[in-house]
Length: 212
Image (tube, rainbow, N blue to C red; front, side, top):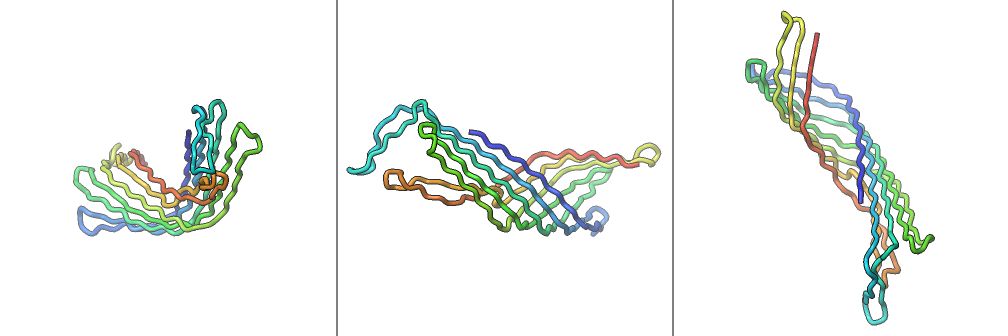
């Protein structure tokens, strides 16, 4: 089993910074966010000694693949765009050090395309292929908290800054996959549905600034 995730974002924001005291500043913003997200999942099942599984007196099924295999490939692609807003702040500690943080949110109208492909090696024509296209709104939340240091160098002609922060982002309805479950009548009737999954990302961000 394997999963591959690709995500790209583009933000256009308008903001204005202001001080509420000599040590505290705020930076509210509004803007537009767009996001491209692709996830690919591959599953393969093989092996197992065959045995008879009885559901009721009239229905029996032999389970176990031995040298045969079942392969399932699922792709979920989406693109969305929508309004965003947020607020950032800095607590100036003195000596060039400050604690900074931000919280942002957006809601994107997104276009989704999901595909589902399954095959069974024992029967070459025993395959399932599905393709779904749909639209839905998708919220995104993100936040950041860190510590920075800024100073002037070279006789106040250049500005240097460094910051280290913990950042996280949560994407609702990030991926949507086709769901196939076996029916109860001897596994001969399949049920088709759509499942939605959220995606959470987090990590450490290092910023370096050099102005002249």
